[in-house]
Image: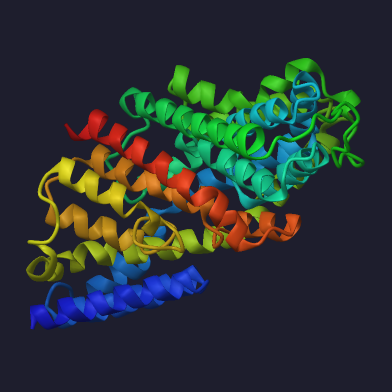
Length: 434
């Protein structure tokens, strides 16, 4: 019976991976999978129907309430960076600093984009900043495929430190903490990704296709609705305030986002005009921030149903997969390096795909530490899925916005994303696996 159930679960898992790779809605996909696996766990005697209703279907979404709140506040902060003109001002300053060398400007914009997304989160923020950055790069003569790839990989580079994305993963690895041990690795992982982006830009712009110098002083920043005259120089530190407070002073993420948001609004003169105006500004930006992540919130409330039932179902995999999985951290690391592209197309190595089931199986069948498994799954989720996969929502937007084909995008970025994954997975072993 257990062997038959294990085979059925694996078949359904493969079905989920295929469904996700074809662009299926993950919210409904994971709900159906949670119900299917719940049925098999009840059939196999691992769970009663009453416990399934209470602990899985009810307890799952409830357990991610804190994660959802972090996502909302992170999106609110990103909305403020855009609406106040801080993001535009920062990007314009960097563009002017780079002069008329497209390579230098693109490299600096990549670094700044990564820094912005160490705290900012949400498709809305990626789109809002993308409509500033991408026209600049295209005006400088950067090939469309390279402009899009470098921007999206830069967005992803900041996610190693981003407390919002961390909290989403933390809901799966409940005993994982955003501490100095993790941050030491995360800073290096982000630096590795930015360095590889720089090498990619150098190869494409200086070796393979020398891009001519163009003046960048008067580029259109799509800022017609935002006056940059109201953005003082001090406002440019706003993007790093939440992350700095979290890292240097061990602040919780929500107070850090609130301080950063209030600071940004205050120095840009958005908190003037009396209490009614202040309330309106705060309410409107918060509302817009929630709208930006509404679909993500739905996914976040369904995913924990599947996370919880995958832990219950894990023993069914032991007779089938128990002897196939590497027994050592080095062996598992090498396996992840080889199969890192399975983080693409919502595959089994990304949390935003079938990876939640992978976590459940690995955590039950192996004696791996939480920091090791957490970072092991984090790397392909960021370097492959968020940075180089066309099924990621904001990546798909960038391709449509810039009229870049999926083939060109993947041809440009996947090999570099795989290299980033290999290096950072090796660092996972050095920091947490040895």
